Image (tube, rainbow, N blue to C red):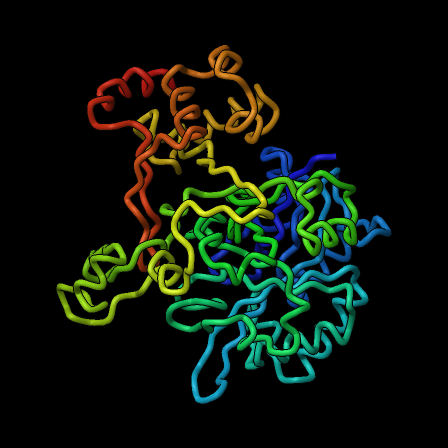
Length: 413
């Protein structure tokens, strides 16, 4: 069966997350989005783990279920440590097949001094290689996936904190790493430019801190909802079972371009080079973004597609499309009401943004919003790239079309 999976989210016990990041709200939003499988996130936090154990029913195959939505036990660790005279900050996702394994991982991390109660995504002073040794010694069925691998400050290849080769990070455990998370600021096409990544399955996840954001990036499978079968599809990079990823337009991500947020400076890699990677206003170092860092390591031209590449599709979340078509903020009550009205008509958000025909959409949605959905599907958008922690801005309609939005606004009230 085909299904959508989002493996990387957080709970209400992580910093800067919504208090609604609990099992009940996640289940509700997963159904709205058409997500069949969610990672739990944060299984290292004792209070969240109690909720998981009390509310999730084990399926006996490495997955758990709540009201028709499946869950996989996952967490994210932030490793901050020194190696060979340099500091590194690496985020790794851990997948586990059962609570017994989770309890062993948590016990071992706690015994090594990790303050697991401090945050849903705890900081540990352990080398990423040591994390791998701990996890794989406990269970070979566990999976480690380096998270958002290009993010400047906390990632495997980040410009501020990462490595130039995965082997330098995980050393002898590198062969056990078979999947990488691309992050919101890059998509698979960007990663295909570096031949060293060809053997890895490139997965995409929302890294959501609020229920409405789950599924903004995700993975589409055609296999049994079974832990080992899903992991096997990733391990083998099986194109018959791992069909494609759902992606942000990467320029919308917070670290796509270089820049300096305090000075409102946003630069392309070429412009950064011209400025010697310094802010042209204050002369302090720029935050070098994903595009620049990838250019540094890439050994192929833009547009190169490896033979074994898993496809991807770029989408814009429905609330963003509604907001622009109406000329309103996406957090407004009117946009939220319209979102739920549309989804109730079609069943799920994914049905609206990805599958329903234009003719079907026009029967229930205003023409301008439908035009926005179609343009988003076809990639006919303009994006002011994100930089130094600021999300990029997508424009679906140009300025000459903005005078049409008044009619759309009136239809909401």
